[in-house]
Length: 211
Image 1 (cartoon, rainbow, N blue to C red):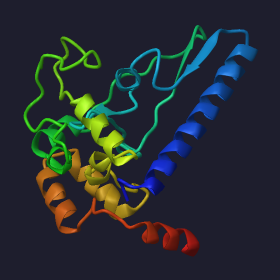
Image 2: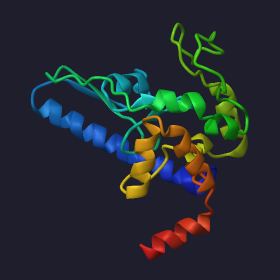
Image 3: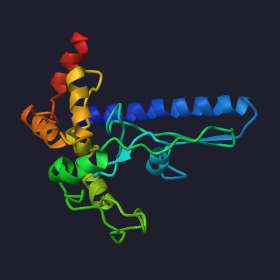
Image 4: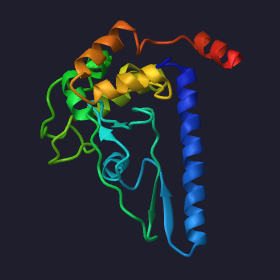
């Protein structure tokens, strides 16, 4: 449905639930006698931490892509001195798929997503990291589009081939294909089956009523 006011409301609701969960876990940790500070999109960069923790991989659109939910995630983090077993980065083929898939860069209305290979691109603003080889999003151009239309966008999430309900067997098959030598076929099937198309608000309400 993106971009739309309805999808923007769903995003806001997701962040609201996110912070409730983070605050609840942080309080539980403090009750155990350890220090804990909950955080959303502040204090530190969430995506690099999530990648190091093994939650997913970095996509061309600059977002975390997870095996279970694709790019449809909102990340919270908790800074704590609680002893924990550290996770490790995972690899399920996202980089190789993003190298040949340009669905997000082609679909971006303001071309804020690079269509080329990852680079040590010179930062365009203070919002960009230095010295990291990656796909660098033009955050100012992206956010200006949000501001101009009065709601968020997230077309890059909608068109991403990892944006699927992986509880369904066929979508799990496509996800498996994206992780190996069949990825080009998976991308072709994704396009032919018109995944990533924009849905109307009416589609959402009918879907909710039928559930």
